Amino acid sequence: MIDNLYETIGGRKTVQAAVETFYRKVLEDETLRPFFGETDMAHLRSGQSMFVSMLLGGKAVYTGKEIGSAHAHARQKGLKPEHFEAFLRHFRDALTEAGVKPENVEKVMGLLEAKRGEVLGG
Image (spheres, helix red, strand yellow):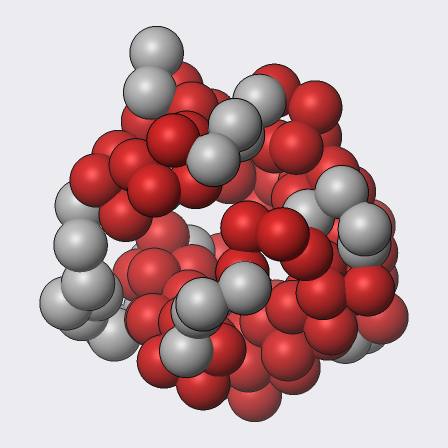
């Protein structure tokens, strides 16, 4: 029996595909690209895959920075709620492209939305 969202959406393969697509979309977005000028994208994609996997109930252990401190530099660069909205939109699209069923996309989005305050620092 599948008892977590991670397995329900397809596990590691789906999460990694979604994260890859997500960051492609983010870097194509002129409003978001400036936040990633000095970023090691391979490291970021790896950490994001771990974070999302753990958030969805997978056995991955996220070993990166606490989410608030991980986004401190972006806040210093002017991260605002409209940027977070764009991130959510791109992640929703990435999950859909990875083949996640709409009802499960919305469950994932709810978990990500719950991180809004930590990301935006408020």
